[in-house]
Length: 540
Ligand code: DGJ
Image 1: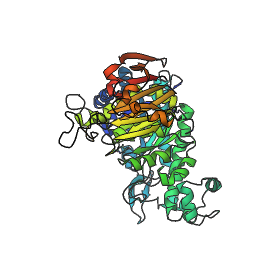
Image 2 (image 1 turned 120 degrees about the vertical axis):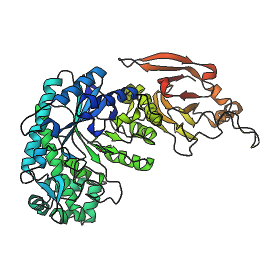
Image 3 (image 1 turned 45 degrees about the vertical axis):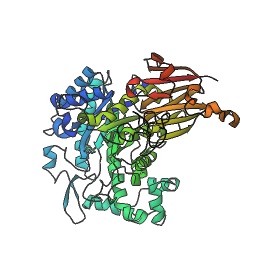
Image 4 (image 1 turned 60 degrees about the vertical axis):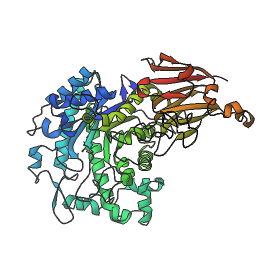
């Protein structure tokens, strides 16, 4: 892997953002927002993502009211956390729900997208200069406000410009200006980049359409021409906003994506057309040089699909940032792939309020997510140091998986899932193991976490429900020593100097909180979310 580009900074230092996103209607005022902050605390997160609504901050054209933003800043400071503000402006989920009433009521001035059969769609057109100007005025006022109210403290670490932009309901704008754009030649800038984009999906589309050296969008990209033209138009619209915003207050800006890997995979139907989906990502990225990140909202549960998306968005020109993911299920373990294998520079899940029950305690259904975040929070200094190197490894127990094998520097690692299956196999089928499950427990206790190797003889572990056994790589003869082969005795032969639970202080120094030895280390190095970071030091 290559060096990870750290987009987020706090006090001039790289910052790993970990937390959740509030529900859509939580940003209107303090009373609505506070639950999300309480949930973030329970999650051990450091950053809350929460919306700012165009309709709320500019209810009357030209009259701005940033009271809600000030309330969010105050709450974040009270809770000692950072904010990512989500600008719900022209687009929200391929829709125009958050445009102010005076925009919604005036389609003559603020053009709607026109669908294929001439029907207006409930989406603002990216081809309408008046809409751009209105959004720019509001967005730059927000950035001015942030510079004035937060320029010193830096509570807001980034702003998401728009939310899942694109068109739901049409592949492109069939109105006059949109049609003109569609019928015009693909810009020379794109044509010049295409041949070098080998391997990408835009390149493949271009090849499949005949690899022409120029022409209209349809000629160059076939049936995806409408989507690509829209991606270019929307990308440029948002990039222009980014330039205008940065001129005022230069903080990280990103755009999130409603992914295309779903249903019939038809642009404008299954997902908003014109967003930075994988099949249009190159076009969208080329259109947005002033935006730091194009960030996928990953709600995919299956590990293969999840990893595929990570691989697509983790690029040299685009470090992986996951601004939204599912608040449940397999995300509690898939996230470790993003962190270890794809260098994710931040990780959030959607609807953070749901981790709390009515009494404000962690909802039992959310415990697994909370535990994964707790473990990750402890490992942030290690993530900042080792992401992008081969010294970080994901531990993820897939369904039916009892163990995982690792080729480490100087060592072979064997991770065992469940609680003790390896040692207690029972005597025969009439005499099953007592008290402990024979098979790795596939239900509650999914093994998951991270293993870091600092140097040959020092490891750090975080996570839940797994044990690591280490055996030095050696000559086969030594490996086959009867004592070493014994599954019962082998863990007792691990040459530990020390096994400690601890945490990292502000200077990044490991502080020991608790030592383990004897019975506590005889069956491998185990981790649980409340153990913090477990450090293992070995010798020959
Ligand atoms: C993705 C959007 O970005 C969020 O605002 C929210 O609508 C979720 N989808 C709901 O699943």
